[in-house]
Image 1 (cartoon, helix red, strand yellow):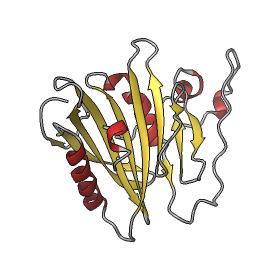
Image 2 (spheres, rainbow, N blue to C red):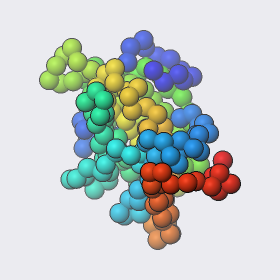
Image 3 (cartoon, rainbow, N blue to C red):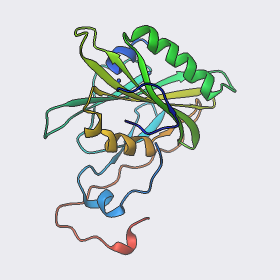
Length: 219
């Protein structure tokens, strides 16, 4: 469970369902793990330059995305469970408040997701801005006894809002949680009109057995 400020219900989350209709606590990572360990993230640039994100190894962009969203998929090699991460973008008027926008998103989710139940909610910073993080469940339409688990991170930049979401089968979120946190920490959104700014170049992957200069590691 995400340990957050407002605890709502004791249990435990909608993207394939929601992204078509609507969609961390920061901590210092281990630089050696980032360089050499499994799960090393790579910068992935949105083709329309609306955002870029650190995409851990094993995550891949999915085809056939709607115009306002990009989806990424991942399957756990050890357990076979899968996860879906989505970045949804919406144009918003100037001065939109993050809390008000998040309330509107929640109303849309609750309407689309049967058995919607919030577990926890708090605020974090994403892309240099305040973001609301919400952890919730909804019931799988095809199985009344099966739930999906979702974490949504919602942030508003000038005239563009982003909804970053992780969706897994109930009870499997922990398999993907660390990777999702890396994605959120490495996310950078752009407002309309900023798409022409230079995008970062993907980092070169470290080859097996390659020596690393510790003085070159950025802490």
